[in-house]
Length: 148
Image (cartoon, rainbow, N blue to C red):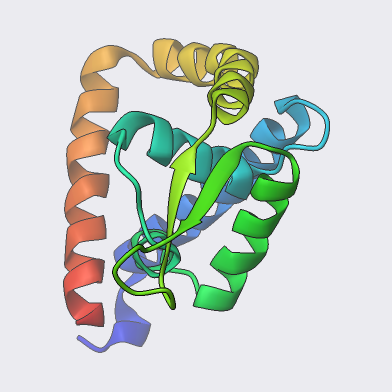
């Protein structure tokens, strides 16, 4: 069977793409004024990891170009949500950490979007969400493996 003859795979990815677009639009509208999903994603990652990251590490984690990540980090720094400091061992490198303002912004954003996420998961049901999560996680891992 060729890839053109696989309606199940096409339907799966089509549904994922549509769900992704709908979720992004709905969450973006719910975020606090001035916050973008990319900003929330970076702040959420930094808040959860509690470790400094380099812009290159963040770009790799989010599958973005360094330029796109630099743009996001510049906006977050301008808003006071992240601290960007030089690497004391290599002045060409930088490290990013979340600021108290960034943590508060992330918490406010999470509070704004949590009801949407929770309601959707509750309506689907925890068992079905767990099953879907396992499949989606495996798909992500396989797709990441293909990039290397």
